[in-house]
Image (tube, rainbow over all chains, first blue to last red; front, side, top):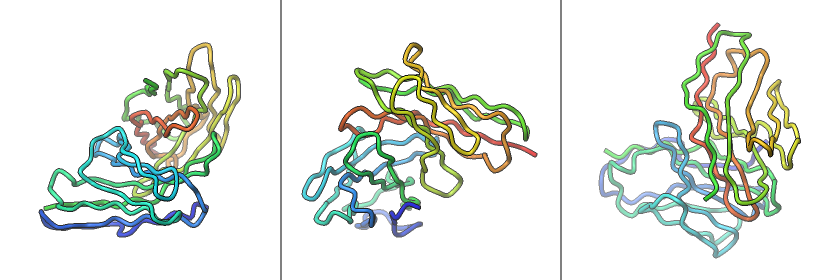
Length: 113
Length: 111
């Protein structure tokens, strides 16, 4: 059973609002990831972290930012939400050793009006 | 760069039909290979994996064999159920780099 949590599960907000999507895991995993999933189901890596104070941009350019101050917590922030940010956001974590399973949270479905 | 190509969906099957979802990869080294499944309204979960050539991963009646000669990792199940309806993702991992996912294949199984 994966212990990785995302809040909120659903969020509807207006354009221009600042939002933070929360992601927490209790497995002590060093590596954490954020994906954006479009309606066609394809996953796009937008941010990842290899540990505390480590953050990297992923393959898809994103206006969001992330921080990793604690091992268990990897929040994603949008300073000014726009309708183009409407999507499903998935957080994931995995242990450092290669070949190990990556665990996913249930996702946050964001709608920006 | 490294990439994964999987068959496009949607795939619609009747219950008890055989399933094959094709997956091929391009990688600069010898990756680990994975199949993840995403049920409606949920995140992804690992279905099976194989870490070296000729390994067979299996779980819940699904199987996939790591074929280095054809750079493939096709997902198979002999008899699908309605509960198998989901989106299936093939993925590879090389060293310390993030997982590389295919675009996903939606499977619908009808009773």
